[in-house]
Image (cartoon, rainbow, N blue to C red; front, top):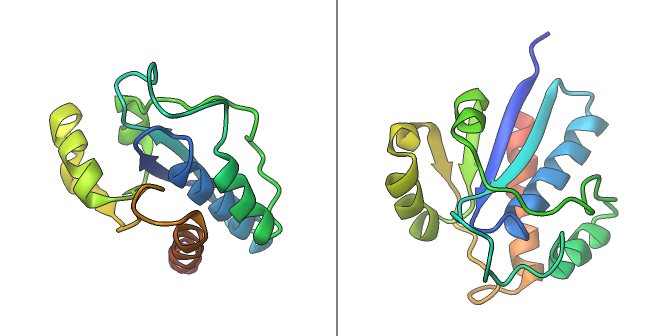
Length: 145
């Protein structure tokens, strides 16, 4: 059985993509799916970013609301590599308006492989709303696997 690899992308791999990864892996494990998610950021450098620590406290609150214990909460945010984009079966970027230009500038050869959701960062949407949207969309994705 082939392992299906899902890759979630956001800006800094600190909040939205990490939430999606943890929710996906939780739901996939419950359903015993042969699928695994990972998440990465599109920033070329995390220096000077708003990320403070390994995982957004807002994301941790959302995961707690859904009774999901994060598996990678202690890992620092990571930048996506070309190899990860190549290896992923499905790639989902959290916010087209924000992430499509970053993809086109850095990885134009993968633009047709990426699906975009419409989940903005904390400056545009509260974590509770974003978390609910992510949960719903991840649950839909899990049903498609």
